[in-house]
Amino acid sequence: MLLVHNGDSSAVDVTVVSGGAVFAELEDAGPGTTRPLRVSLAAGTYAVTCRPEDAASVTGPQIRVTGAGGGARGVRPITRNDLYPAVRAYRAYVTRGLDRLKDRTDELRDAVRSGDLDAARAAWLPAHLAYERLGAAYGTFGDLADAIDGRPAGLPEGVRDAGFTGFHRVEHGLWHGEPAASLRGPADRLAADVEALRDGFPREQTDPGDLGLRAHEILEGTLRFELTGKADQGSGTMLATAAADLDATRAVLDPLRPLLNGRMDLAGIDARLDRAARLLRAQHRHGRWTPLSRLSIRERERIDGAVGELVESLSSVATIAAVRRTP
Image (cartoon, rainbow, N blue to C red; front, side, top):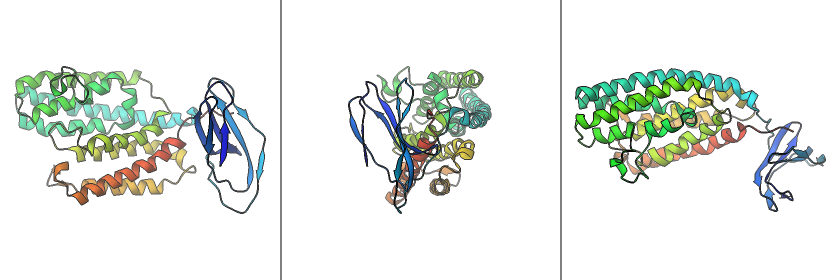
């Protein structure tokens, strides 16, 4: 264990490096603080690099470590330039997905306009899942993300608040006996917001540093909102949404694979993705998804455990794919 003391006037990031690879990292060590940095090092030569905010990095002397024990695996830092091909591939995926989203949302709007609420309920889930599968692009969507997929929690009047719009607003009405006439406005607004999102996306910028972070955060949100039922507004389709979030996670990981291979073992993550997907798909029977409330305790524990374990594994992707300044 190393004790890191920051005698500077600003926060610093501290790394243990060797041969261009990072072996340990401590972020945001505050001014005047002393914090532990735990790392196991094999025999070799290492140095400590400090990167203050808005200042050039400083690397200390080379220190020789001896002994026969094993140590942490070093990881070569990823730069913004490294991530640009992954961003381009992911944006192409999102562009295709936005076209599908618009088509599905228009079908939902048209069903509501026609007054056929059975058809609207059937159209709601395919449209919503088309949005969920967009995944990491949430960070690019700005205010339209809440307009399209926001929840009523925190709004002054809850589900009756004028600021409650989008898929969950339409969902609440469809599954709580609201007449078609009062749902036409929310459905029209949703379709218009989706069209604006599709048309505006080519002009929006996607931060390369977001990809690895979103690979972790998508399923964090699934655990917090879908698998607790907090996002459900009556359709009982939280497990379908969770399955779509797995698809979105894969879509983020795939363009990152050329960078992650050689830096980490993806086999375990892929196995956990497959296991979580099998458990969720098992709850899709005879064309219907099992509501959370009808899962047995064992089924719910297995799904929660599989997704939770996967989220923990994906935190490594977020760490390794984070953009770092180089000396």
